Image (cartoon, rainbow, N blue to C red; front, side):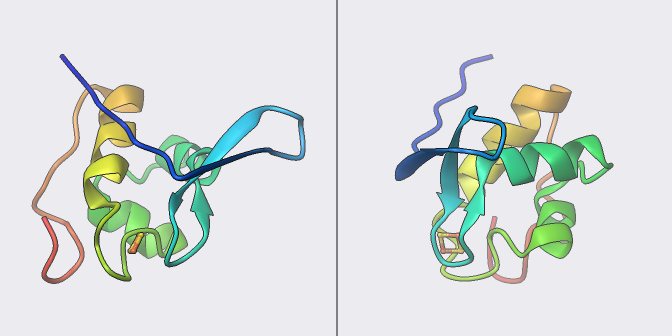
Length: 85
Ligand code: FES
């Protein structure tokens, strides 16, 4: 599986690990998305519901999907936020 993820910003999280802002509209980082996937959000829509990532302009939806794929090996497209896929 080939996965391409583009991040706009990078900063250390509270543990000093590098985390990147994936969703600029909602200010959601890769570590937050990882945490929501670990808590059970296995779809783009599930992540959106959990932390609002992807609910603005929609430009980050593909990156959110790629992060879910990295963590789970799969990401359903059926639960993307309205108007996004
Ligand atoms: S960058 Fe995520 S919704 Fe706009």
